[in-house]
Every structure is written in structure tokens, then in C-alpha cells.
Length: 314
Ligand code: SF4
View 1: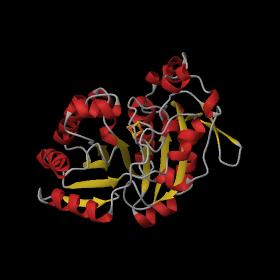
View 2: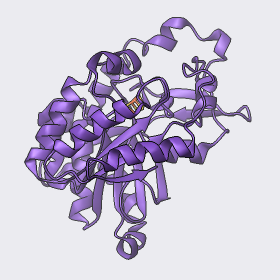
View 3: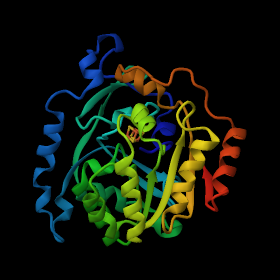
């Protein structure tokens, strides 16, 4: 989900498990049979979590990034959870999408294992080691992915653990999950950085694999709860949502949500390209150029007509 951080850091050094030509289409298109089941088994006993045993909750991550200044206030530690139900064409973290553990070959020919089974307690050891940075900057833990809500108990308990340590908490998510999963983690969440990609359901489905009805409804319900600061984020993707009209519709929706004051426009970039090559997957965005600075400033102006604070790049 993180639009910048992981891709910036990995730059052009990523990836592949299969040589592109050797990867069977069925593996490109779908997770190998059993991966979803494997994830369910991993998290099956998480439902037993209580106020005292949440540090034992299991989950699957594919990265932890420290010292980030994106994706929440102050200096953040970003934990990337594996799995996503969307397949956005522009996704810059394609290795996040499948729930199963994968292999990627890096540009130098080495292989990276993508995915690691862990517990809340183990992740918190890393998060805790950065506590002095949080204290000085107001930072803390940010959950990203993938989509954190694909592992709802793990996400909830990570946020719970961070709040119990006194850290600020944030989550990047496009809210494509049953609202009960969101409701369960709101008591531990300070900032919800929620993707709204398009207001047209059909176009949303065409470019991401699902329509937007559930996400929009969850945005309304999260805003109505008043339990966290809700910031709307929109990746600006040429051919998908980069017209004034499309951004205007998203901004109007954001401005209609109680308490929402801020919208981030995240310009499309190509930093995930090498990962697709490494995973043996086609890069569906082709040669589409990134939006110009002038274009982004025009769209920022559109957002500001709705009396929202607009940040380019988040
Ligand atoms: S929501 Fe889209 S961009 Fe974000 S991780 Fe999932 S597929 Fe990638």
C-alpha cells in the first residue's frame, strides 16, 4: 500500500522468483492453491487473543522500514503486512499482494524471500528500539502493506501493543474489508490514511479488480465514528483518475465526510517496475508518463476548492 517508501528504498534493485519466461500463467494470475489456506492456518488461533496475550498474535509481514518521515506524523517505523484483495495496475509493491511467502530475484541475481511469519511481540521489539525517535518527533508505528485488514487480528493487536507503549499509531489502508474489522482496531488507531482511488465503481473495478462500494461505505462509517483522524489519499494515475473532474469528485466526497480536513495526492511513479520483472509479471502501466508538477499543482487547486488541506506526496 505504501505508495513511496518501500519502492523508493528498494529503488531499482529488485527481484524475481521465476525467470519471467518460465513463470506459468496460472501463478502469475493467481496465488498458488493453498496460500490463502496457509494464511488462515497461521492466524487461526489469533481469535483467542485477549487483553493480556495480544503479543502472541501471529501474522505475516514482508518488511519493516525504520526512520520513515512519510505515512504519518514524525519519524515512523512502518510494518508491511502481506496480502491484498485488490490488484491495482499501478501497485508499486506487487510482492505485497499474494498472501503466501514468495521468492524474488534482485537485480544483482540474488533471491529475496518475501514474507516472514512473526508475532506482535517480535515486531514490537523492533518498534520499541526506535522509541527515542518517536518521543522527539511525535512519531510511532504505521501499518502498511498490502492491505493490513487482510490480517485483522494481527493489525489490531500491533496497534494495541503500540498504544500500550505510548506510541502514536497510523494505518495506510483502502478499507476493503468488513467494517467489523475496522471497528475493532479504531480504539488503538490515531491516524487512518485511507485510499480513495475513484468515485466510479465500474472504473474502479476495471483498474483494481473490485468496485468501490465497500470502501466508500467504510469511509463514511469510519468518519462518523469520530475515533481517529481520517486523511484521504488518492494515487493520481494517468488514464485512471487524473482529470479535474475525477479528482473533484473524490475531493467532494472527502469534504462530505465528518472531520476530514486533509487529502493527499500521490503522483504515479514507476519505481515498482523492476519488481514486476523480478516476479515474472507483466507491468501493466506500459510507458505511461508520470504526472508533471504543473499537472499536480492544478489538481491540488481542484482539491482546495473543497476547503481541504491538500498535500502532494503525503
Ligand atoms: S491496494 Fe492496490 S496499490 Fe495498495 S497494495 Fe493493494 S494492490 Fe497494491
